[in-house]
Length: 339
Ligand code: DAH
Image 1: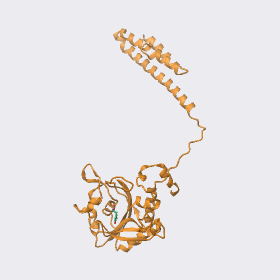
Image 2: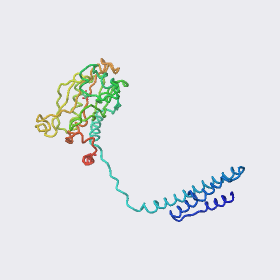
Image 3: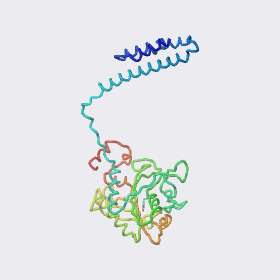
Image 4: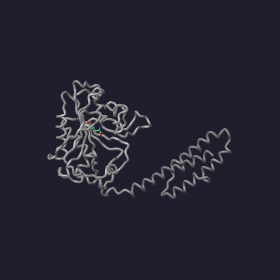
């Protein structure tokens, strides 16, 4: 029996197939249930006990070699087919379609560049935050109604783990690790539990600016705001400040710019007032400085925050906020030339 196995081994090692059909015939001849190797396996029962070990080893070797050889031949057919027939290496390459920058990214970059020219550097913080950084450190008292101003998404019913509702949290992150002078601009995504419509979304983007040093005054804030408005919306742009309330600034204000569509004459966009609101701002409340370990008797600061979607709407008149997150290329393509 050993001789027969050795002869078959020899045969298998030299076996050749010209095509897939021939290969299948070989597989049937050797490896199928009625094939040569199965027959040997059946005969194995009759081998004398003292020879079983040696014969068994030869038999296994034969089976393995046959299987390997058949796989090898099969692979060589597969390669030949795809390698030669399917790929035409002389064909012209497909044109690579270039993407465009998202309008929100364009505007974010422009805002950061403008503040960059005033010496602000970029700072970022996490989107998943805790109560301290989003509310408590920013002078929102535990039961203060201002907390309801921003409908918060909490994570896993834990009141201390939440999605940040504004980028003001980055102010705290920087102030608790750095002493003044601090001059930062913080762009990022924020989340609020709002019903999605053409004018509200459950996530949007903000840019926050913070300047803390000795002798920073409201006049410095006003100057920075005017510079920003003229750079962003053109040199004719006017600004006005209205008193407002934010827990983290005192005094606080909201800034309007002269409507950039009608130049201040009054149109449907500005509801015929000639003005449109674009941001909130104020002098950093001393409580906020103190809660971050900054001496409020030595330092003062101003802060401001604005929505990137709002600024983008003013620049490009996008009427439906949802367009920003739908990824419709027909919409996105329109900003190609702005890149
Ligand atoms: N955090 C405010 C909001 O989300 C925006 C804001 C207002 C930021 C006044 C400021 C500020 O830094 O001084 O509505």
